[in-house]
Length: 311
View (tube, rainbow, N blue to C red):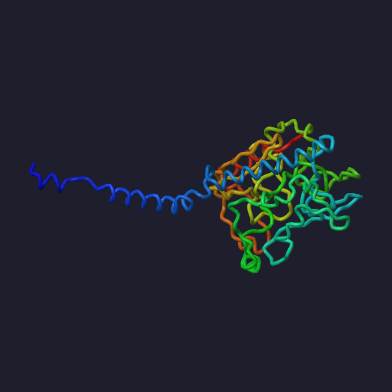
């Protein structure tokens, strides 16, 4: 080979290589967050799990200070028979989310409130002012009616998470009245519903296999409680009372009663359906979701029920 041909075949110069490497580095910085931002192993997912650990720790500290008793966990049902919904883990007095412009959708006071009239958020003292831990980093959902929130700097509503309906006492649609022992309105539709009022009340399964708090599907998210029918643990259940979250590439961040957190991946197309900001449900909530036509979603429901306290 002649010298001229060897010169023509010479590799890139150092300057050219540095330019190529710099360009690739810039592309990586720009593209990787977009490609992997919501993956189960992404930084958003890690932050979500860290949030869940902090929420689990707050609830555990509350229980330690209250003789093993879990924080009350009420839904938005009206109190009856001497019950009181003014003391709740967060959002007392039935404060719920929706897709309207109501200020309650972004009023973080409801996460730490301690007021004799408007109620007490029981884990408020244990989270101090870190109210951002109630929001999944991947939750960036506001409806067309909530653009005023966006103009004020909000990118989401005040929380993404909900507590397992089988955890803690309180006003509930299912189960039995804590004061009178009478069946609650929804008892006949979920007769095996069980409430673990203390950590030591979790025996089937134990605390390490009972999810405590998880992200909820934004279209299902109303009050700060998420119900699962324990009967679905047998594998024959077909109805999600409410859908779990799936904002991390079909995974939901959750914390268990023993304090460990994990991201669980759902496999069903119904379980992981896209967020429509209330459009699919006509402005209401995506609840009572039938998954009988999707075996993968049925398996998701079975897993969720198998990790919920049962008697």
